[in-house]
Amino acid sequence: EAQVTQNPRYLITVTGKKLTVTCSQNMNHEYMSWYRQDPGLGLRQIYYSMNVEVTDKGDVPEGYKVSRKEKRNFPLILESPSPNQTSLYFCASSSGGTSAKNIQYFGAGTRLSVL
Amino acid sequence: TQLLEQSPQFLSIQEGENLTVYCNSSSVFSSLQWYRQEPGEGPVLLVTVVTGGEVKKLKRLTFQFGDARKDSSLHITAAQPGDTGLYLCAGPYPTQGGSEKLVFGKGTKLTVNP
Image (cartoon, rainbow over all chains, first blue to last red; front, side, top):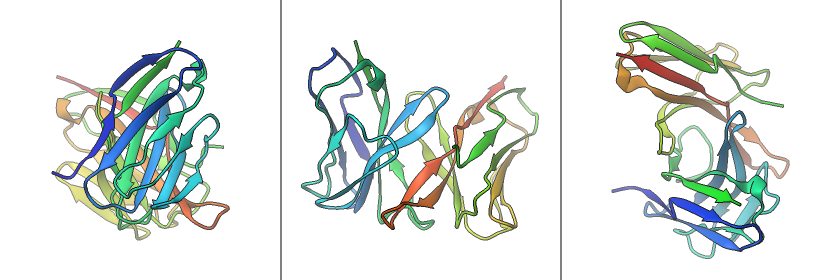
């Protein structure tokens, strides 16, 4: 079954404690991205990756890091989380970017609370 | 600045009613996508519209892309409780680096009451 898997689904942490949210896809997709979803602000892109070892900033990259060492994995790293990073996070993948012919597949989301 | 404006933000209707939600922009998009997101899940693609004036039907859902490719609408006929969810429109937008990113509207939260 084609899927994007995020872990963990729920996470409560404290300010400053480094954390990683993993994302894995089994569709051999080149394009992967991370979004955060906040009430009243909608979905905003954090980082994206066009292929292995190629990453770029989205609209709200501050406070986040990503890496793309393998095609299937695209972890999101918060080196020093702060309360304003409390949000619902989604990983997505597609076969080739954002053009019309590419379907974006989303993970089920990770709800993060930073105390 | 919000590139894609969706309206209404919230919509609560009774089962069997018809409804239309809108996605508007001052920019031209090469395509627009509509997603539905249910609580506790990620967005799922419903349709992509590509040609100005295009109309696509998905059972009781009708999607239209404006002639100028600046707007789109989603019409649901005889809404059912299973249509409840957050409806998002999205489109590719060029970045300064020469690639494209997918931008989303803030969504329309639809509740269909039995």
